[in-house]
Image 1 (cartoon, one colour):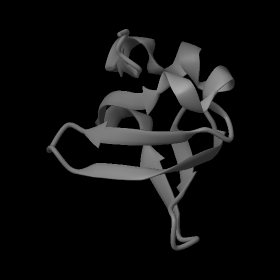
Image 2: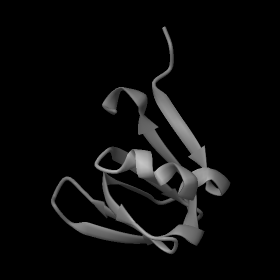
Image 3: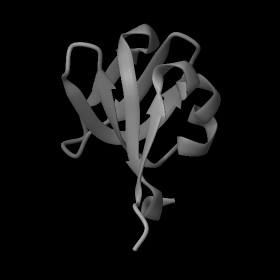
Image 4: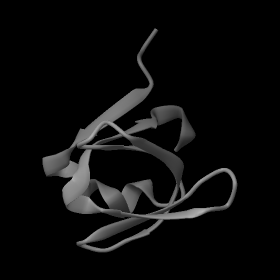
Length: 74
């Protein structure tokens, strides 16, 4: 059985964001906190994630350690 979780390291995040739009992701921060939600939009400075309670989270790209998502959700 293949693994479905895909990890994108900090150095590769920006180049991978276009394919992750409208997909549920886990944004893992440098401090260990994790935000879960659908990626709504992004710029070179921030990600906008909307969680399951419909709250928006604006996350600065330099604070991200990695993004983890389920390959089955594409």
